[in-house]
Amino acid sequence: MNHALIEIGSNSIKFYMIDNKKNILFDENSITKLGKSLNKENLLSTESMKLSLKVIKKYYNKAIKYNASKIDIIATMALRKAKNSLEFSKKVKNITSIDLEIISGEKEAQLSYLATISSIKNLPQNFIIFDTGGGSTEFIFVYNKNISKKISIDIGSVTLTENYLNNINIVDKEILGLLKKYIKKTLKYSLNLKNKEYKTLIGIGGTVTTISAINHKMEKYDSEIINNSKISLKEINKQIKLFSNFTLKEREKIIGLQPKRADIILAGALIVETILEIFNIDQLIVSDRGLRQGFFVNR
Image (cartoon, rainbow, N blue to C red; front, top):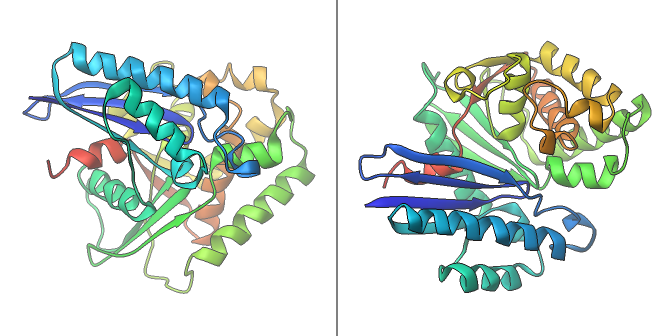
């Protein structure tokens, strides 16, 4: 009774497969940048769809090969927003015979919450989980160990890179300042910053796990080290300076950074930096878990 999940995000597609005892058989990802160019016309590009469908077919075939009795396919922000999401969903159905489920921002936040509380040690009564994706950032406010509010904001590393940093190598302070101002304004507009009860931030998603991997100078990714690790605001500031002063080719050589993530890591790090600043918190806890783990918590 193996169960497989293909999770389609704005930046990457993840493949997760467990057996009936919830032992992990596969946990893989491929960067396809499905959300690239989405903000300009709200259309998925032919190129990104083609690459994504190729990856989906590869993961679907792998699930069949390893005897998955059930296969689910879910998608997040890119397909929530795209005008041609129905076209893409039909193509997925054609190659897999499976109906693609485009989950809401609220459900995405709920799955992130389930994944986090199952993996982070010594959680306080009140905390905030945030998930920086390629096309959106989700926030879950937990008060007295219960979810009090869930918010999905249309701001992510892929869309910000596309709109502000496309084809820019070394990024000067003026552009950084404009982007930071936009991120801060967008987040403040959507978040209630009056409540001072929250002193703990937990970050999930590829941006925070990458920042942690770079901090650990991790040549080979180790989820056991990354999960429950801490990242200081000072370390994030340091990495942003590094990313902005490096060309794309130089970024690709940074230990701990996937080369295919080199173009979007600066925008992602700026989102994380701004989140810490607006909540006036000087460090975050990293959860290596995400939607895929949350999807299986109660199954």
